[in-house]
Figure 1 (tube, rainbow, N blue to C red):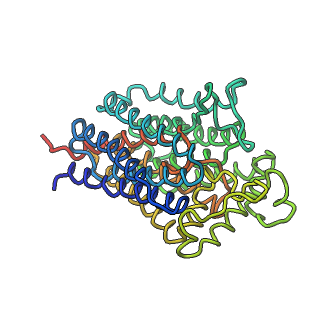
Figure 2 (tube, rainbow, N blue to C red):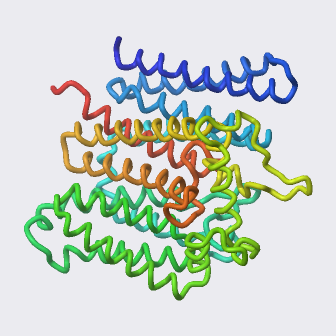
Figure 3 (cartoon, rainbow, N blue to C red):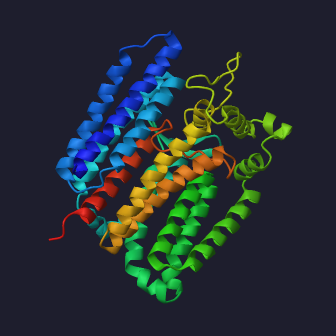
Length: 424
């Protein structure tokens, strides 16, 4: 079976998962199976087949597993959001369609993605501007103490989702030119970008008060530096700089310090009762423990108290992983993490197959940032690291995350198509 046919058949489980999920919800709500579950499944399958046909025409040699894996995540995310609130699923499905359109447009305009190298400094500038936008008066929006989104009329958008891609493109292009020099020795003019990115991560920590985004950006940078130079010393020095900066700003920036206190003592009664305290992370841990090995059952989690107060605050965004663990248990959560690991594995394989330095670094950086995004949210919900506002890719509610990750997917597939194409 050819690669594209494998991709097509891989979309069938995603559609069946969505159909079965909606059938389970309708049975739980009305004690009967509704034909709507099949209708939703066929519509989703049709959209995915449309994406497949486009890939077949534009990128015939691209990796055949990435798109079906993303379809599995998207179908599961829509079902989980419908289980929380019907309007959430409707919005998510709309953004899924928008994401597919942006995905196709990215492939059309960046099929020869190497042209991005010519505009690396412009792309870097755009990324920095995107990071600053949430603090611009009039359009910036503060969410739970952090400045993450901008309001464009009825739409709220998180520009950091697009900024991460811009920064990775710049770093991949820059390190392609300087990696040999960095391998030979350390010179200030060549490690200047390391210090600059470290400073940008610290600015993120202070300026938009988002520990998760700063960790994701700097972690992606360290991954690229290590792949480009094979020198662990750069990673060690970079990690030390980030740890020192995070410790300093934790003690001087109130919002960051409050997040650290909630992480360290989630069950402290004073913190638990305080507004913006540890209630969210504590409830997340309670929910996951209550799920056990096999979960309470799909649709069985109680989201609100009789008085209307949320038991799991922001279950559609930050704590959706805790909800999944509660209803599907450790086994269901492990299966979800397994899908993410498969995507990461395919991304790194694309980097290994790539034949030029820029392609290798670009695929590595994009995959590392995607993996770090999953790590940051799952680690925060499970109390491994402080809880942040990063969304779980293709699962959590959020149009900006879907669009940005579809762009990331398109770039990975274009790199894959060039790497897997028969050599002339």
